[in-house]
Amino acid sequence: MIPIELGNHAAGSVLDFIWNTYLAAGSYTRSTNGTIRVYKGNDVVQLADGDANDGITDTEDFDAVTGVHHCRIDTSVNPTFYAAGNDFNVVVAGMVVNGYTFNLCIARFSLEKGFDKVDAVKIDGLAAAATKLKTALGTEVTGAAAAGTLSTTQMTTGLTETRDDQYNGRTLIFTSGVLTGVSTVIQDYNGTSKMLTFTAVATAPTAGDAFIIV
Image 1 (cartoon, helix red, strand yellow):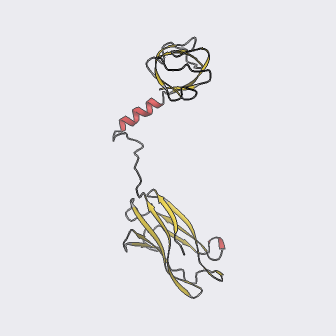
Image 2: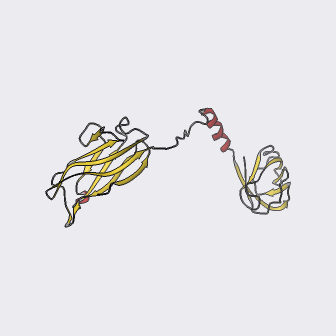
Image 3: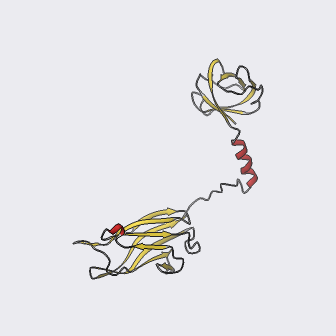
């Protein structure tokens, strides 16, 4: 039997997989189930089904299908054993099928092996920096160029803001059209005409070109 490659997962994950017992004549149930063991790394350190906090659930003849078995490994129940940065092998030992005894490696997996850790609530170790970024992103404005004045320094828009100068000093970034990816600084905003005046760009936008203001 070729071990099932379960891949690389986050520590604390629950892994489910199906494995089979069969011989040339067909599928067979296990007359003796044997014991599911999980080995960590290149070591005899292991957890076996039935140990305290092993996280292993072995179901023979899953859904009453002969020779099809289900195994669940809940790595959250023992974070000391199922630690990030390790490889694991799942073995069934002492299993008897049709009078034959088998000891097999049935699956392999890793937990955060080579993962790059991302702290979603801090930037450069600072929670305050992440909070400021969240606040800034919450003020982002989206819009599009509209028919009217469209030049390298001015653009009629579909913005709904009615107050003058509301976007002065902020950065305008085009997200579609010939200026996609181009950014410029807003010099003036007219809340009546919805006109933006900005530092000159290389090409005039066209009606429908999308942008964001950050």
